[in-house]
Image (tube, rainbow, N blue to C red; front, top):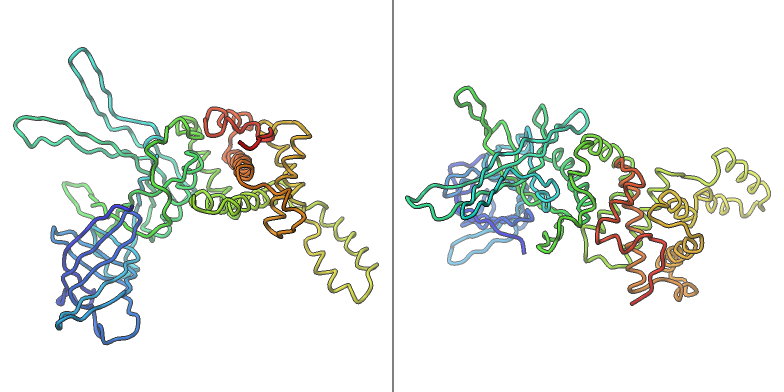
Length: 465
């Protein structure tokens, strides 16, 4: 259940600041937002039967916070005893700043806090000593860890802390917290979507590393709109940002940090290279990567769809990074020309269409090549390799074409679940190699995790329980 925040205040259109309406804004942690108003904004109101939308709605909460609502759609309105009320669906919400028009919504940096990020980074500023009856606690904020994303953005792992408070003559408790953030900076202000694009790719990288779907917990930005000068320093008040997102499962309280595939400490000496490889290779592998993360972020997806997604992702990866065609273009053209010359005239048009993809490698061939490339996690038995590939191909063909002859050979239930997990390991090994991990190193990462160790080598047989 998403957490909710409520802001009561006054709301108006940018061109009608003198006619504000009282209302309540409700925000949820997944970025959803609605505002319930005492009255209707603008002209027309309940008499206007068209769906009304507003690019910008401005507001001030009762505690003085400036709020900007963007892409608002009027959901409903009521008229009771001459009292009008209305509700708006809000696309995006910015708490802490007023933007007069959409083009003004630009930021110099954006910072995100993700689930599992604190444990993945694994850096703390706390130093706690227990000596007899004396407990000594010291805190020194860790230094930021900085790199860059291409030539356009700086990337930093930042640490924020709060507390303790000294409000009583007798201190009965002390509370300090540290949170870890990913910050994307630019030399010039940019639209929010450009930052979100980078942050979503970072979220995907973290999900691969953690081996769990990572979700965005908080998002905030710095903008020139909220800049003040004080004692020779420029201070930017943070603006909290809410935008609806695809919801990943909530952070599991039972998750144990050493079940992660790799942590920051494993890549700290090559952090820049990992980030550079991820962003460079992600563009080349977008079709494959999107299929992988679509199934990872959607745990309710049917098992059959997860299986087909990971098979398609492996096919796409092989086509893009290993080998596209069975024959060279020149050899294939010679073969096609010979076939077309020998074909009866009345069948040539049909045959030409059928041969469009005749130079594509089969799924069977692609899987064998990928298993050969990652023999350190696959195993080397030729019999096991053939059995595994046959299982995948028969199951894919049955679920795609529903050929009754394949029904008994297609994997179902626990067998399909295990087959899908093994294919996912193979795909993750491919992605880890793209990040820059050596193949022996990849095997070590899988072996140290309880989530993977029992499935290695992936070609070993697993019987149904």
